Image 1 (spheres, rainbow, N blue to C red):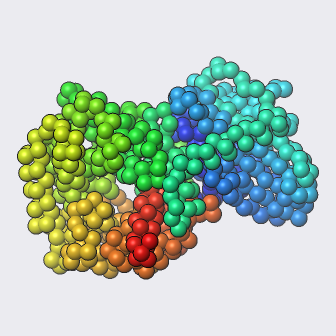
Image 2: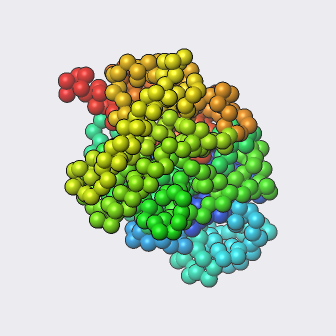
Image 3: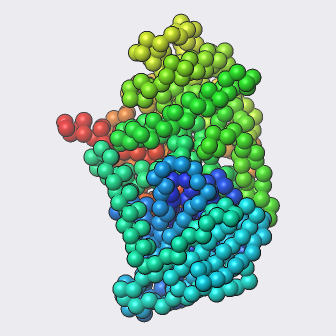
Length: 607
């Protein structure tokens, strides 16, 4: 067992309320419950000695490991090949189809021998509350019970378990065709003990979960060139969505570094307005109307909650999955961090930042498709209208911007552009549905924003739109300019901007967000290229008619996916994945780029 396996050497399983990472060595080294944003139970990925893990794998020193998903599902198989035999561990979590928040969550690990004879070892070493809470162990005929304050974990298996202090260990030898399993169930203290597993019942659950995912994916109407890549991405987005509310989290993990050994280690287990809003278009394009609608309802609820409460801004940048705005940031100083990357942060202080672009993304989401906009009640429309009235008075303010810099507020061009989007889409909705609105005020604000960006967001030195006013720093967030309709994709100004980004931000088709050396962001160290930005680059290239370059970039980017098609936030200098994993923003931008590129290639070929 590696102390810290590569970030990319993991698959993701989940039940639509929480999720776990399983390494290619058969180790569950990240799992938080009962929700994505709950304290961890297994967190060896952040502290090998004190974080906790659950390992189920052969002990053979010469075993090689391979991982794959069952087709069109979130069922993960880890295969081990050795001279004595071939075995596999199949991991999955049964989704709760009622969409009711629950404190009971189950991770199932089915173990099999495929060829020969395989000796498997199970180690279960939970460390509750980010390793801060002590636990006790009760070991009996029906398995192990780990008790910690307010929470308990039940481990049951089809083979014997033995005590190791307050942890457990088990061994089983399987011959070809034989199988067994271990089930780890988390629940509130005093919860009912699960029924002991049998091989027959584990097989039934595996089939049921497989059918759930395959039935869900049949809704997809994607018929383009990259079905496996796109469908793995949409399954990942589904896994990162909290079903009781429809809120999409940014990533399944916290604290994984953007630079190994650096301080850019954030908690991403929350719902950013920006990420969720942009996912709406991607989900609608693929045919997943229900998921898109659920997020829009969640978003409008957040706007309505702040009305009449004297809050300065109608929206916060991010929330917990249940809509709570309480995300205080602290550091876990007892965790050493992934390969020494500290501090490990829990919570996120960027929740209190001013990021004016989120209003553009919010209106962009609500306006995507009549099937969504028509569902907005009159009260919901009034809330949107009051939000735009507020924005008309507040759009011209420096903010922290899309990248949540901690080096002081600036007049970010992207933020201004997205306020233009907010007014533009608000005007379209009001006109189409004949809703009452101060349209003249919104139109005046929209046009003023546009003129200001053209005048102050353009750099004569770079012949490009730039990160913030009165500067010359390029920023990859502006790759969204043609997608949101701010500028024509074939205009001279845009093609010049794209050329400037090619020169300054693109490295072998991979795209940096910006250059921290020339635009200090208040943090030490550097970072890798942003996979989100690379897919936005593909989208922009396709819209600009640069199809050979767009397709080559898209195909090349696929080589940076991990072995099961997942992406983290960044790609490092030697091609390694960095940052929290897997990253929703990366996967939704992949879907956006694939659809845009498919449409452009079809148009070129006359289809």
